[in-house]
Length: 97
Image 1 (cartoon, rainbow, N blue to C red):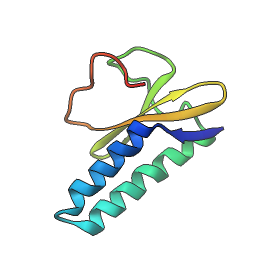
Image 2: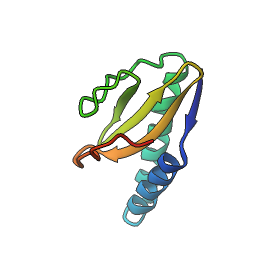
Image 3: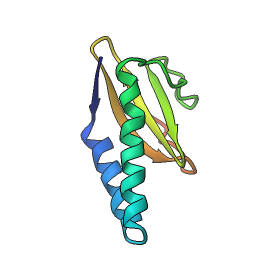
């Protein structure tokens, strides 16, 4: 299965990396790589992560790469990474698209 990243998720990951790089460039790069590597498993195991409890949609799932939540949507053709959110933050009332 194809794992694709939405523009929003790419922008969020870049913002995380840029923010962390101000104080620790090495950690910022390592964390960004860990997040991307974590999503690669979804090509073979699209239902690896649990449903996002806040939304209650079976197709909307998440992985955790401390301290971030990686939200993704599973369809017949692909897994789309839709958001990368710090675990301490509340999710929006409606799921990201």
